[in-house]
Length: 155
Image (cartoon, rainbow, N blue to C red):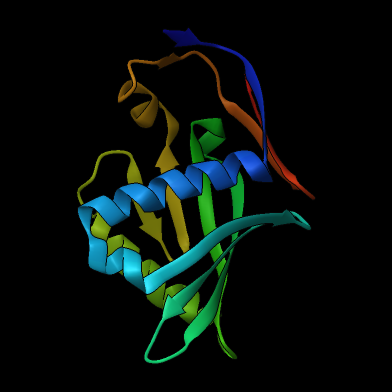
């Protein structure tokens, strides 16, 4: 399949279905990890993708929130995914984002199409498209997060 132009809009409901499916697969592969994270949810607001869940840490579940921003990178051939803030109870912020992205950098080291620089994960779009037998004939022009939706334009 060759994709040269596509406009895609995903709603919070669409993204939450993806998150639910992903967490179910994580639970199948690693039941202990699934027990530690509950009620995963995506909220789209104010230009930011917000991931929320509750993490089991001791007796009570602790609310966790991660704020993520998306932007085209490398002249539209890549997508930057920047973790801007992580909050856990009253702790977190930019320092929490740096610590988590350090772990992500270790996890993706040597993986094709993935690179971490600071708190940003850069995803080479063509590399991931090829994994699904898709050839891309264009570039990512923009990613826009509005209240309730995530829009991408590729041409």
